[in-house]
Image (cartoon, rainbow, N blue to C red; front, side, top):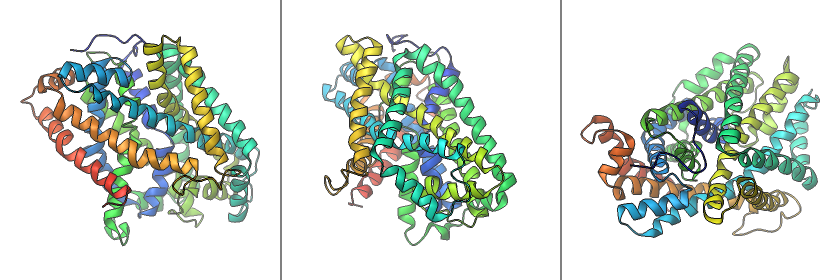
Length: 456
């Protein structure tokens, strides 16, 4: 049985954990990446495949990661070392913790740059710069931002300062207090945007596009669409980067891991679907292209907001929503390294947060410069931002997910997992989880991984 508390503090309630873990999972991946990925593969059919992948792959791995975190009650590195010792296996399993922390650092370095774009767009929307914008003006606005390293540095610095200040305050005063108002505010803003889309957009068309599964719309390469849905489901839940593991370590021993994981996955998926319900009606009503790729948020939506009644207000609300989503995820990405510095180097939490934030900030400078003055500098043909994105999404996170599933399903004793999950080994729920975490989830993630590196 795990120890009852973490030295870093504990969530005050089950709700606090759910809000924090949902905040970690909900981010730009849900509100920025999900709509344009669904658009690229025709909407409804992609959404259906995505939901199946969340249930069969994302949920069992999330349960495993929370379980490992709560049993170890330490940073991911120390948790994996302690559990490997308890289970009588190689201490090299601690490398899984290091891999998660590295992934979190690399992700946060470019994530902060993109979050900086959303901060910049809050002020562009609020000052009326979207008014009357056509495709050329929207593209020019975005390109001008990306080409200006000083402006990008300012927004990146502001966002990393926001993130570091929250983490420095600790579990109760920092993480929990932030998500207690950020997550409800995020849901309220999303609902407001959906209601706005229902009034000002083609809501019926948007719902049909999002929820009517026409499998012919998966395109000429349906296998690629299925793999993309699998990858989106896995990555949108914040798995394999240490964030869910460290949040699990602050969870009360009596709380049901299975119930909490289901609620978190459901809320994460709800946010993605609400984002689609807010975006597609606006896009379709303005004759814009749903499958316009990553530019959907920053180049397509400003055109729509600039032409619609109330566009100034609701354009501003939408980008504030994006900032909130990015902020809750960023907090969870910095926390694992801060916990390790406190445990292993004796740092105070403010000092650990400042050091971790500084390292991420420096890496982020390389990412933002790769968009402009360092655009000629490439590694394996990619600039720093694209390289960090590729390495984390296609290598570190899939490997992290596979090894979490293997450790929980094959290395940990049945008695250990049964004890931590609070499930009877002969019960239906435990048997389903064990089959999914031992066979279905690892195979699914390996397929995504092999496809991403061009071997499948």
